[in-house]
View (cartoon, rainbow, N blue to C red):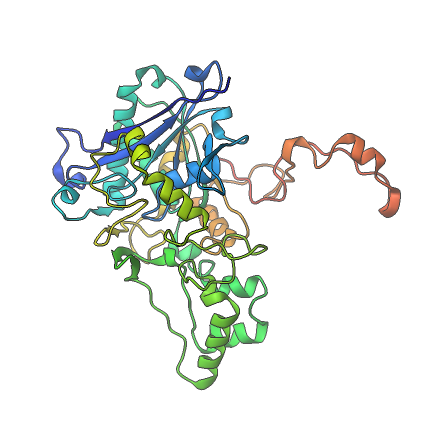
Length: 434
């Protein structure tokens, strides 16, 4: 009989004795813990998953990607045969305050949370400490942190916080995917015009004119330095678009917007390009649009019986996943934020990588918000030497590209049968010596 252990509660993110200005006051972070689906769960690693945003609930990753239960096409739940809980204990944290069912004291009084990168790292560290106090039997286990997008800021800063202020936690590897790392390195590869040209949506001549003559820039929504919710939308407080004033600039800019579904918009309800998968239909992200996965996920999370089972009845959040109107987040570093002179995650990797067993930074090649070119440039700046054998290595899932039987039976149409290849990274980026 299949059995799943799910525990959820609110973790204290501002323990007594800490200075008040280090946290958004009265922060309570909602976590969801899923024990590994094995007999030796108590001996397996604890993996903390963090979605980015800022303002995105990590439960999205759990219920739509890596958790033991996934939301299905009818709005119910189904088992996930590829769940991370097949090999590890999974910890999900809704962070920072105001996201999902997490909250701060101001929300109890009808106000809103005002978070920063610094306050978020400190609150998350305190929440992790609180979790291990509740589950001391897991404290000795390896503790992994992984996530994506703006978690590229959350993870290095949280890791540094733990290494400096919570030595009792057994920090081991971290893995950061498609991450906000260093704005100077990533700013051009995070531009929607640049990305659209790279993937063939904009002709070369049009791109050259827009980019060089019109100074046209369409920064990713991740380029904001100050995030604020208003009327159910994100205010683009630090987003500036310069597209030139002559008629040709205006015409080419309109053509770019028309052919790219408003610059691969993630919020336009009439979007006709799936910014998450360029080879499938548009994936509406609106939480209130019936029939979408996000709609079903939100509706399930807001059910009264689910809220009771998750022990979040005390949360003042009026809807999920939030954050509510008035919520604000200020970037503290030069990562997904144009802040010259401030540290970026390059500085944090230099501090944390020597103290960790493994540090992995990886990037896909179809992410319009954080492209691999910028991540590669940023990681090169960290300054570690390249491993012997060169920057790029072949990688094959499950050791080989195909079964031996398949390779042996392959017709000699283009030469001799393929040889079995050794395991390793598959043309997937640089290998540097951490």
